[in-house]
Image 1 (tube, rainbow, N blue to C red):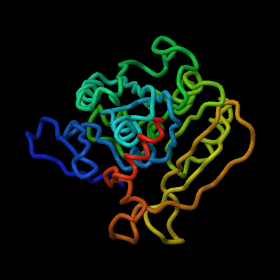
Image 2: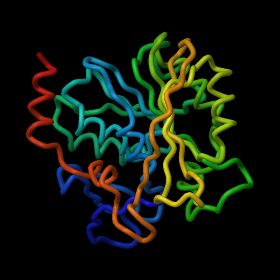
Image 3: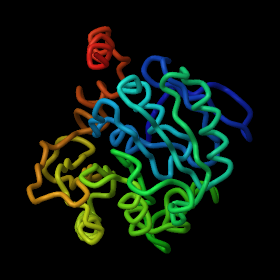
Length: 270
């Protein structure tokens, strides 16, 4: 389920400049390294940041999630920060963030989420996003590069490490949002509960409508020290049919901000 943005031509050993929202947003990526997928796009649209919120993205890669959130809701937010371990990806994120308007520009912290206490203050964010590595060591398809392998496999951090960092960073009653393989839903729910992150909203993502096809991804929001009650949203389909076009919902995730959305954002600013 790879994202399919426009890619500009360039040397085979260099980077590509990929665009979303009809060219309104660009993201530079390594041609043969880790490249963002549709899971990041889904997570960036699943959250609902409140006015004046501070947002943190753990393992930000080239910064795609902060870029999308900044484009969609940046004027509403007080602060957007991404943390990335790999120096090559961190450099790309800095470059990508530098291209955003100063008023909504994300910040980048280069560091290891397993050492989160050295990087940020406790409970300093209202919303923490996390697209952790999907595959345990020894499972899943081997990646094309070391950079991609670190991003997709639990080499430099397991699910529990990302959840521990999220629980440390988010304020009490704040929100942690994740995207994870649907097949590992049980593991995810047990792990979030162990960190006192109460599951509050869930949505399963399918490739296309077909009762024979299992869900591919789980989108989940949790509340730190929250009470019971989980809302399960209707299924989300990426494509309208097998080998078809994006579903209406998915296509909206790639649509530029409308004038109405821009006016509403300004109105929310007061």
